[in-house]
Amino acid sequence: MKATIFKDTPENELLDILASEKEKLSKMKMSHEVSPLENPKLITVTRKVIARIMTELSRRRIEA
Image 1 (cartoon, rainbow, N blue to C red):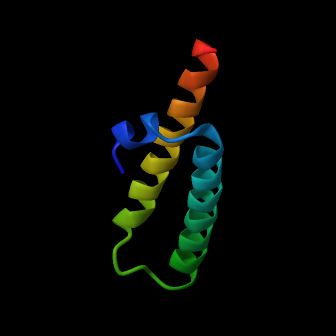
Image 2 (image 1 turned 180 degrees about the horizontal axis):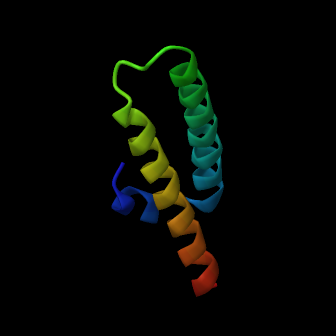
């Protein structure tokens, strides 16, 4: 997901997406420990999406 998508998204929706992405990341990490994922790069991509969402939330709090 691009950062520009998050600029138009309401804050409550961003928080929901953040929670689901964090849950997805923890499940991927756990399954990767048990048996290697087919594409382990997805863990990195998910971490970056979480960082983008948190950056947008932080930017909004600073502006307010």
